[in-house]
Length: 336
Ligand code: HEM
View 1 (cartoon, rainbow, N blue to C red):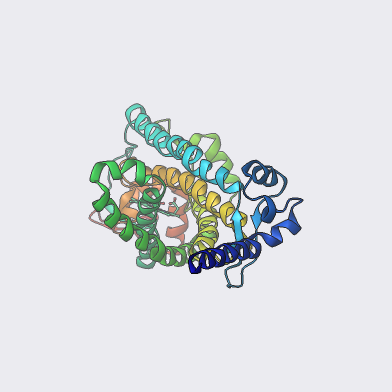
View 2 (cartoon, rainbow, N blue to C red):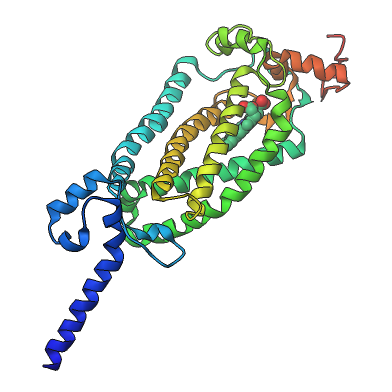
């Protein structure tokens, strides 16, 4: 008798729980899960009618009141099936394009070779800002790719234990380096915006394909050419979208509901793939792709011939401002 009494109590408690959790859903849908939750087909029909089945909770996290959200399946399918296609096409496609470009065009060399004379292109603070943003970006990109695809690409290589330890650190790095990345982004915007306003010269540069394919003269450019301005705006707009969407992922209680949170995860993931692909092109041209380019962000000084070939108008501006090139060849610059 005491046994059947406690069974009755448990049944009663279970019924009461069902009523609390699913009761308000009856108000949202034309279907009462309390009475018919045991019938799966009725439940599935109800899901077709509304965007979710939700109840009521008394804890602060209102999102936990969602019992079933069918859109979550589409979201999961997108991340599992569509995102790898977008990422694969963008990133592997970009690597393939750059490899073909290197094979066909070769390294972009200096027409007249190195002059041995240098001109300051980026001051120490500009280089610090660049490398702060760039190093954070590279770690964010690798750790982010691990979040998206590590389970399929990295786990089989290293095994569950190593993957788990590595992913934990990668996740911390991803969460915390987001902040210095955002700081770098804001400073980059402030210090370089004045040189990145699109103008008529950029159209000419684009029409000539930046002189990248021809071996002849590069179109005249001021401090940044149209290609570099493109990179700047990709970094600023892409970085802003990554920051806003990432902020919602860092603080998931901020979005109004779970559907909005899913929206931001999709934005974060898709923009990340395109952003990484674009930066691969930038990294290529700033290092192996173009002779003499890396110095600009390395020592800060570029060879005068490099500067004249790629940024002729900028060199004129600098000389007008009185920047005399330094170097081994003692020749008076302005007369040239
Ligand atoms: C190893 C990786 C990287 C290398 C070797 C590299 C190299 C360079 C070089 C050489 C320049 C100067 C080009 C010039 O003289 O005009 C430059 C500029 C710049 N970099 Fe990077 N960079 C790297 C990563 C990044 C990353 C990850 C970002 C942003 C997320 C970034 C953003 C920029 C921007 C906005 C500029 C100015 C605009 C431009 O020149 O395109 N860089 N970088």
